[in-house]
Length: 291
Image 1 (cartoon, rainbow, N blue to C red):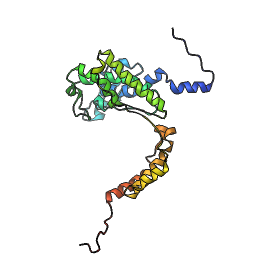
Image 2 (image 1 turned 30 degrees about the vertical axis):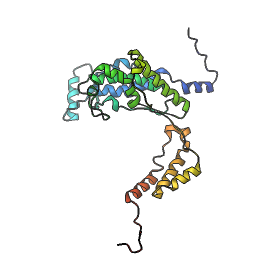
Image 3 (image 1 turned 60 degrees about the vertical axis):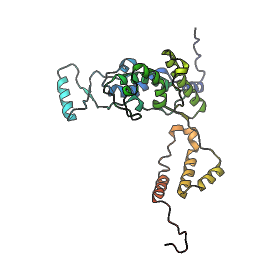
Image 4 (image 1 turned 135 degrees about the vertical axis):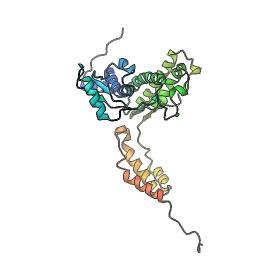
């Protein structure tokens, strides 16, 4: 029998627990109403996620906007008049959302910790891949230029490929703690292995997971002399100055992580470097009497 954990003794212990343990219902609610809701709208409600995602917010008076409607206002007016005689009043028009191949869906957890959100997202994406394969109107992927059914002839082939596809194309995570990033990457790898084990695929026959998209936000190296020597050799000179600015702004990456925004601060330096590169090097006289 599992022993219940003791109550936190003080606010500090509670804060530490909350840092590493995200309540399950929080994970499900946020994921259900982001990835789950996006796929729900792409499928116009025709998806198994409406039963799987128990916290998915759905309203009984939703009307999905038709893509082929010539005029949105006309469609809204027609829909409202058609529903006026029914108990469903005050209909909510859901804007049309273009379908996407699952390989083009990107999910980023900017503070992934040990990967709680990504692990739950993995389960939803497995359902999404199967539904996209069975949809004759599923669009081509930006990755391969083909829909899933063209790349995988049978559902069994797709099932065997899904774990590796999810880790390669869909899930991304950032954390400032290298140990947390390692745990998240390992957890996703183990989740993929479990999916293959459930299918009865032997270890030798499983697709290789060559990398994960989990990264640790770390500051740039602090060897100023090495940086100065490297930057001084770049042409044009403004590129070396840009590199030094970026290194300086990245000093807080270990504390701020994905909250660190340096794009605006280095925008002027980037523009100057771009202009000088486009202008090209100035012509120099190489002979005493050039032709």
